[in-house]
Length: 356
Image (cartoon, rainbow, N blue to C red; front, side, top):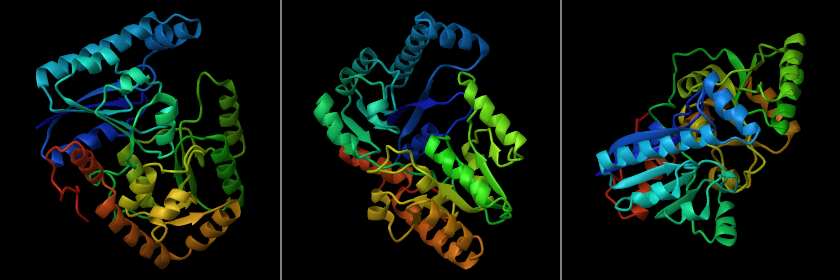
């Protein structure tokens, strides 16, 4: 069996989900190939001028040419490879015409962001055999607003990427990586004040060239002596896993949209064998209530950090439990097994990935 994986990449770093899905399908016996597209536009100064700047004044010619070229590459791969399964992640730039031309393959899309912000038309979605969402609240929205049926499929983790590194010294007290949404920024800045004597490392690409106010925030952190805490840099999956290994506490905060699902960092931190403090979502209470340490507000978070920084035994017990749970139930191989079962396609029920 063959599978073509089509998924997004980001210009300044690669979150690795396309590779992880391909590896999971390999584990189920599929031969795989990938075709990738940039979430926004390709990197480089020429593209900033010809695409980004041009679109600001209403000229789409170069952007449309990039999208058309991507769709041509997809069809070229499809015709050369002749896959049985086309597995699409996000899929915003994959046109209805391209999907329709891949008529002989089973087609699946898995949203790794809110379906409401996906920029995918009903005409595109109707051409998929199965639609999966990582946020269960999208299911009624897709049905009522677009007439599309979908299924809930939580995110997962790749055991070949996120794994314990016991040889690494735990020299960071609190670690966070992610986008600096306003509510996250407020929490991180309060932690930086309340734990000024601890080693905190908060990573994220928060300076954006289109938003001058973010330049001022960067300068403010530098002038206040917090430049080493708020680090304007993205990390690739391997770097993130090593930071998880270095951290006594890994902080995980969700976007406000999340209520009936969770972000992939939940499972990645679990799989890495690291200790996690995560916001108290209803979904996590229902599915991982006995596995994860959660906080409901800033006061609980502050108190939990103060406690767990000095309770090594409690952190180790929690990480052992969460690592086992991640490997048993939450790998990408497990998630893809659900998809293949839904499609009545061959799969390996024992596929997990790297063992502990």
